Image 1 (cartoon, rainbow, N blue to C red):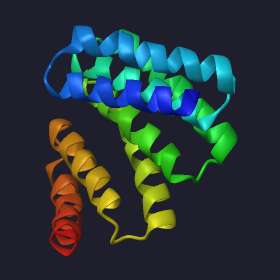
Image 2: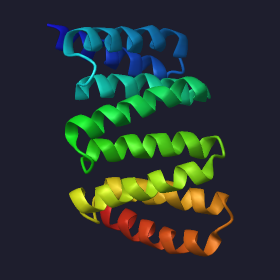
Image 3: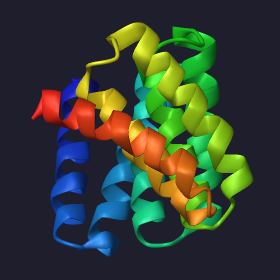
Image 4: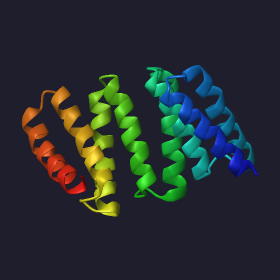
Length: 166
């Protein structure tokens, strides 16, 4: 029963978020998080998903100091429970890297993008669309850091992947 409740709460939260109704979305995500933590415990992958959802809401609003510990906790749970090379770990790494990237914390973002890219290429294959997502983010980071030659090289990989995926 709780699974359906948390699913509905998350869907309602995403619905509100897509309409920039952040005030309405926040209690929905928090309620789903609370239920999952109480029922599943502190180290369950579904709890990591709820942490990620709330973190993304805060991230979208520029509430970075609130988003960061949630992303970090979600990453820790996923690494512990799913293993260091799981695609969900790559997702958490990419999300945390984007958070740092948005704050201009480039030196913290870069190793996370590289690790996410390595996991996705290894586990999903170089041609998977999720690889292209990280390549695009990493390219944007390199350009923001003024490393245009590297960005051009990474961008050519992204364009090849995007063309194949699209």
